[in-house]
Length: 323
Ligand code: UDP
Ligand code: MG
Image 1 (tube, rainbow, N blue to C red):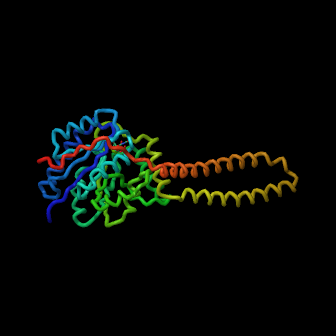
Image 2 (image 1 turned 90 degrees about the vertical axis):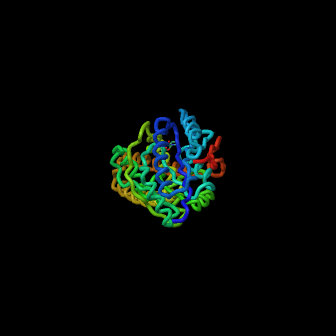
């Protein structure tokens, strides 16, 4: 193999003071073994992105950097921009410093030992390597069920995502340069990366339990994330409204004929229940249709404003520090 290339890990952190030390320790061990095996260059770094945490997360990142500037770097966002934006902020900060970048959650749910396989796949010529969960035994039934339904629903709704792949992935410098050209504000990285193309592959790992702390993705955020994923990547729901509209129109013609027959048969007082039902049904469908359209209008509103997706307050990275 030629000279080992530079790997940057991008780790988004939101209120992760409980896990950060452990994550840093394990990543350092992993890096040391990868450097020893000459799989990655000594210039490789781990970049923690502090996503506007309310606890000591940024302080810990600064301490890690001060103690080991040749290893740990940090990006401090000015406010909580959300997981996807935090990942992008990190990737965009390092895109010209590294040959490849891996994004990984801070909570150690993604298996660090998969990094070896990812890096090897990169040397085999893959520009994107997806980390895919082979089992979800450690997730609660609820998390497993909602997450798996999410992937299936995404497919049905026409957004092309890799099944059971979250945001644990390796991307090459080339892919990062292309990703920089995606200017959308409503970020959904796992839909965007497959759109970039290039040679890609998957590696499989078992997802562990969160090392410490609680999930930063409560049901509300998860739902918002799923709706964003669908409406950012597919116009199928809009087309669905048309289909439902057509079906309803046909049904109402049948209902009309039925009502007419009942009328001439002389049972016209029958009308009350069917009228009530159809009022509720049509009203409900109209509101649903409006809601879906509203979702897209809101999205267009956010996109035309072109606000920055994140604001970086500090970037501490010492590329010259000695090992
Ligand atoms: N995260 C973030 N900003 C947020 C919410 C979460 O940067 O607003 C980070 C969090 O620190 C973690 C990752 O995103 O590293 C995934 O979050 P979490 O593990 O809570 O989600 P889950 O695994 O439960 O889906
Ligand atoms: Mg997690």
